[in-house]
Image (cartoon, rainbow, N blue to C red; front, side, top):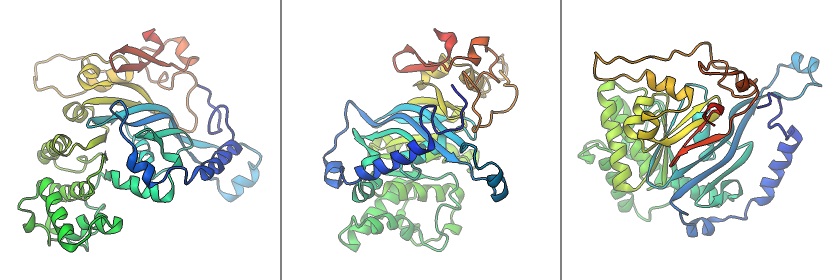
Length: 371
């Protein structure tokens, strides 16, 4: 892949501005009625196509004066990413810090705007949603943040926290209906009996209980999908299993789809139906969880799996320790972006940007050595 500083190899900053104007012209083409009539096609809830999310680097005043004739530089957080999220599944997006997995999830919620590519929700392009359609869409796509201590208002009661999405979106017709939905969501999140928790404050709860409140706030609108961004990373190991079990139960009981974002492949192995492994803004391997873990094909996936703890202390495993640091996302290496750290790299890896290779079934990996 070329290492230029423009948003894409074939598009300049001017082109990105033109796309922004085009997106504005599309606003209103898809309204809330279109969204209400949309149906899942072939089991695919989201279809992410060639997604790009680049962030401009803002230079200081004096540096910008000296370098004003240079092209704008970008952090390439998400770079040509394509995948599908199937209805009713848990898709784990796995990778080390800074690989772009959180940005991908936020862009699917329109909390970040895409630089290029498309995200289709039930076959509808999200960039064409009108203001009202976007508001309706956000009822159907929620997020659970990593830190339950900072993601809820400490001055609100649990009832107020969980009821707020209902009030903001005006989806209940009476106080009684609002209370019933709040009690139901809190109970389904594992805080039982719900009435004992409704008028407590966050500081009166443990970390695991606070995260259950966040889950209740995300599910009270009965969404189609929840982006769970490292939802157990800040919790004690002893209660992580309970939260993961809750998410699996809600997937089965409520029919909610999860995009589970984590840096821990062992967690993804436990909870997910499929795994997508991300490195430096690109998905390098994706497939059914058991297939990816049992038969990893990309060297980066192999390295991640090699360090997963196993219960047998006598088991002999060869740990793959990657050399060096992750390259700067502003200056992506040429060819395969993993080649500077890859223990299996050959000379061609420095020149060829690898396409996805079909391994079998839903299993794909991006490595030229698989051809």
